[in-house]
Length: 320
Ligand code: HPA
Ligand code: ZN
Image (cartoon, rainbow, N blue to C red):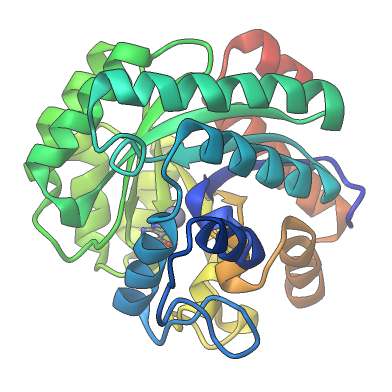
């Protein structure tokens, strides 16, 4: 399973930082990160709001382009060790210069340079999806969209939104997504991880998305499943994340298989692997064990991911 060539479409760069990496940065800066780690040194949180708080506290020690270069290298090396040959990382200008375009450019240059080195060294290709954070509000999302639009190109290929889905409506963020679309960026947003199926339809249609982050609660609405299947909308499904955050009891209870059976295009990712104690290998093993996907089923899913990747046709052709 580890050696199968994998494509990951849904990975938060900051959320992929190993706990030891964040502890190292904290000690270099002589800051204490109270409540971020448990006794075993893992990330600590009780529920989704707690997860977001821990995530943001951990991110507070990522303070310079050089820190992001080190993080990018660490994450790509880890992903490559699990057979990932292509990854799309969500990157948040809110954490990289606070939404200021010129600071963002410096952070981005550091990440892009590291990604080029990692391609040679570890054999993994990376693209960045600039991501706004829903609970920071529509104005911050606009600033992030401007950062994305200014730097759209061969490395920054997408725009997305994460964070707390209970805040506002999709329409509140439409300006940001329109701005990104005009800059030729491809679009995805978290929806239906926590919120009801109608918010998936709203995000898909009001924001003009090609892909949806999670979207698993679509399973509760057969009509929505039919529409997503017909339109070929791709779900970035992260089973280990959903189980770790308590949305589903275990992988057996996870709807990924039901969604696939209904013809919805599903792909598999890890979201924030150290937070959820997962890896792409672990996700593959769980799906094979639980639903009997086998190498064939897993490879079929990887082809869906390759087709849905936010990259140029030549790169895509190499992945398929
Ligand atoms: N959901 C929403 N926002 C996030 C997540 C997630 O799983 N991870 C990082 N930001
Ligand atoms: Zn996510």
